[in-house]
Length: 124
Image (cartoon, rainbow, N blue to C red; front, side):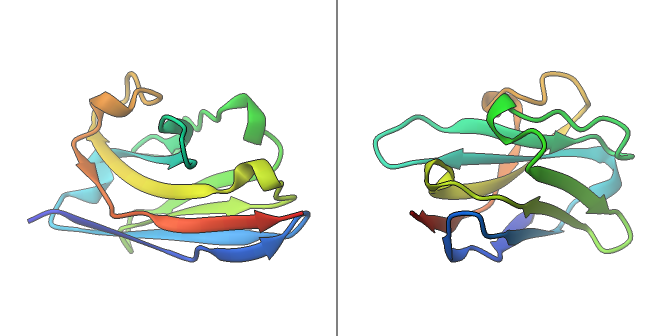
């Protein structure tokens, strides 16, 4: 059984930082592209960032470039999203997801497994 468990969400003031982690189990982690997505109230889920199985490819959505950094540790089966200079518009539930293969990493429908999400709230 594959499980993805996110942690690290919370309430932070604008300009602050949070570090989200996703712990994966039940899959050969190093063979999966890992992604972070978010969904704000009343909005559709959107792609945030992804990282290929060896970390060589790390696409980001434009609104987080230069502020967020995705990384992975294949020995620990974890993926991390470091979020700096947070803005109120970053407020959302953040989801970790896993997919086989490296293509179409920005398309949520291509992902095979999803975590339950962690809430990030940025106050102004």
